Length: 321
Image (cartoon, rainbow, N blue to C red; front, side, top):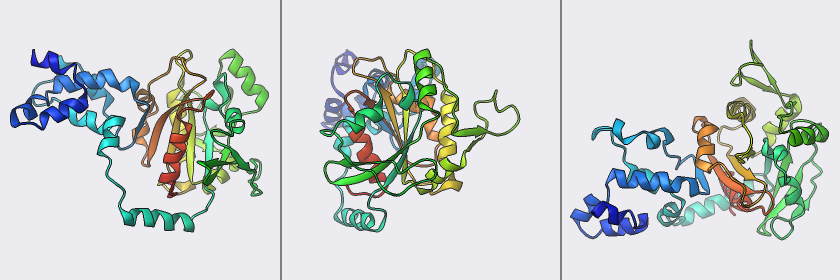
């Protein structure tokens, strides 16, 4: 009966109940209860990152296969992963950390450059980039820099919160006509940014990818990467191939291994059935990346979620926003 009643409480209320006495402190840690909360709430979370990603396979493992020795600490897993709990537990920023971040932002490029790529740029019915360029109330265009990269251009500069400029270099897989044809036919256009290496590369999605020289030049100069994933459930996805491409773009021989990766788990508009961000992170094998990453739910039509992701990647790049 206690378990049944506690299942109607919020995780926050359970934690408060557990702080009242030793008895409730023990009772509220019931692993079956917190596993229930995890499986219930995971699909509703709008972001997950390298510090909070739970072990999806352990969470999904049937309870019948677990014993007392192997029972997972689901409460700790929940509190670590839940966005609401993390906001409440997030410590205040120390004064010296804010000063250090400010001084660091003066030393590095005042307009950080971000490489944006991925199938979500090309497959969605609503163009994310076009919406960004025509939504001055959300993310105004700040200009077109003169710095050119051979074969790529200079990208577009935007303004975040009317304070911080940043530059996005958009990398498409092929020509606009080929992209549009593939989108209409729901096929994958041949990606001309990458060349697969090794025997049987065409049949093996995890074969090593080699980036064409123009894109290599981009990867060497940017401060971070934005991968736009197609999160819509009405088409098939090649996540192994996508992970191989992310690995190639973020390879350590092309720049610092600390440069962050923002994954925009994007759908065209509100109401579209989407893959939850935690399952997107799992399918893309992001825990294999030895660098900071964040998966953020986003909508192309309204740009919901975009600014949250941009703020995160700029902060991870050393910019005080």
